[in-house]
Image 1 (cartoon, rainbow, N blue to C red):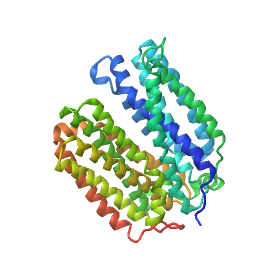
Image 2: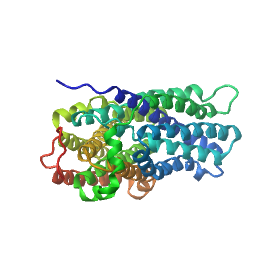
Image 3: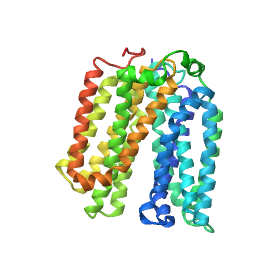
Image 4: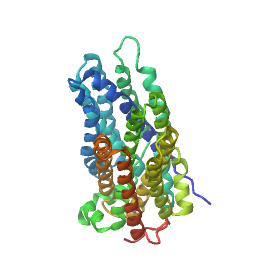
Length: 401
């Protein structure tokens, strides 16, 4: 009989929905507001760039704070920069201050760095066989965000008596309050916290990563999947624009891509339990390869939209699969939270590279060349996974390195 997920998983599901809602709203607003306030056209994306930068900078310190104070206090603390991001962002738009806009997105990046740990917090203190399902469900919060984020932005964008988008930033304060209330109902798992407190008498998180090939692979899978997704998603929209595809059609293709990223998470954990972790990871890498292959073979709008859907599915299986493999490998280990921090740091770095590289690669290698490069990376990741994940199948016990 399948055990039920604890109630706390659903709390983290809604907490992650708030996290991803802020991310969706920010990506919708940042470039538009940035271009209206920037002193020069080239700097219009600087606020969003600082958001990514602060996610990278704050991720590892966030994991150390969680190891020291516990998840609950850390998540409660994270609502403060989110609320400040709302206040500062509102002031930035009302006062037409580009500097304050940069500060707002930087504060938002700090919050996101903490909130990204929701998927790992959901696995603390629950049976090993339920961990992939818990991670998968929390990631599925993106489905709510994909609807609430654009809806909230459109509803508040032109609120009477305020500058355009000012009320959207102010909404972050309300989301911070909701996050605070949700996290008041969470409770730290004793095992996770106590293990981390004694970590200094054992291997450090970095030692665990460097000495365990499966942990390294888990980070590589999640990071590569995220980087390729960012790269191809952004470059696909640029490529469609070059093909003179109407903006509404480009937006529709991206929306289907986002749904493909998050909707499968309602089932990914169950698929891992049924088919095994190794098969799911291979499926994810294969889908990423298939996305690039579709782009290489054809370049019409319908094919590009299909490729984006396949890309979203591949991201989901590699992101959830990588997290599940990592959780499996660090089960019962000391410094586990520190390893999770290193994982998210690696994912954040590669994802940021994937966000900044599309224009450069499009001008250097072209559309086909970029997809060939991505395909080569996927093939390499497949063979690397094959060599390390021999006979690996998710069970209730941690596999050896």
